[in-house]
Length: 219
Image (tube, rainbow, N blue to C red; front, top):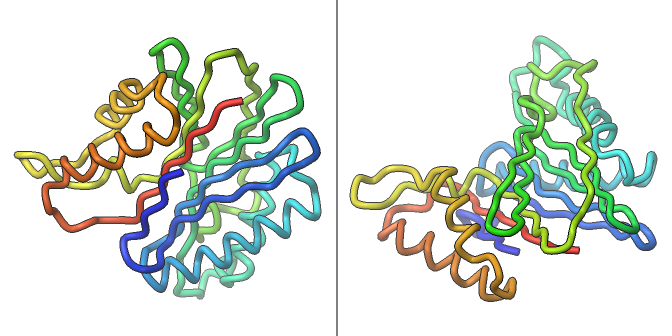
């Protein structure tokens, strides 16, 4: 787990709930950082907990639909005259007992690494809660079979958007994926150290642009 807010508090959130021999794990990237972002993480975390308690953790897409409706109403963003327009990107994985996983995302992808190959499962190309995301917005579940040797990663956009290098360009998704491939086979503790070190070296003293969150796990 890599969780590094840009300021003392921030707009990124990671979330976990056990469900017997199964579990739900999530990564959330809210509007903004610092105090405004932290307020949104409180709303997001509370809403996610409420929805999971009401409908259970086993249908990530349905959870996103309910979160969207509740957050839009909580912030009065279902009303045209409302000036606020805040929301969040979310990735949710429900790991079922045995070897099954159900993933749903709102602008956050799931990366699967196996034998130095990487597969990206894209979430839906819309966020949660914003005024432009209507009440009837539908999100999609992706059902996967978990095989031996697979590792799974979800990340907010803080890493790929971080500026650095000789040309002061963003870290980028390709560089992040190559970094994940390069640390495969290492214990997660060592992976974390290698990833954070690579980000720091690339940044070369540049100001942190956003909160950074990356979670990796294996079954």
